[in-house]
Length: 232
Image (cartoon, rainbow, N blue to C red):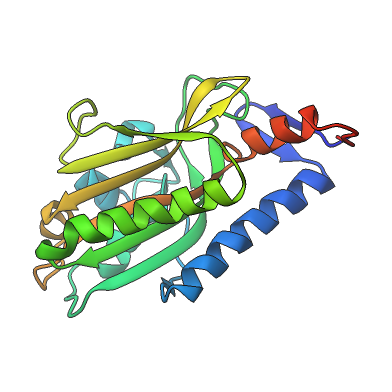
């Protein structure tokens, strides 16, 4: 029987669930590579300055290393640190995979953790193409869920969620354990991030969760548990 357990906000998977997690990430990466996205290797830590300027995963929810550096809560912060004080000269469709860390206080099984894995899609786009590419990044995640017959819904969080975004949609999947569970966020920031990080070129930014584990595993675990002759 496949198993997992969570201790103090850190999750552990057995061999079968580790294999499933590995294969899901590889599948999403292959899909993006086939569509022409570029992979950028990014660290899971960086400067407090980027966290403070980005102001999405805020300092309060970040885990510090020392007075200079902290563990990142998203590869989005790594993208911003990589490109800060530089010039972007063309539209870029990027993705990265890294370990994410957050000072999560309300720990809750596989739903809310202090360490998790995430594949992040990130786009530098011309302002006039923002709506088109927002939909593209969002639909990459929807395509993945449809392929695996995961029931989902898309919720417009633009006005509900705080922050400097121009548009924000969440994808929620249906689970037995948590009901509708947010697994993806797609966010259009306009030129706010490029201004904050001094990224020249006049481009706007969009970020979208490709996969965040272990949240994405929850509907898969439930489907396997309920399948006839299941072996987990």
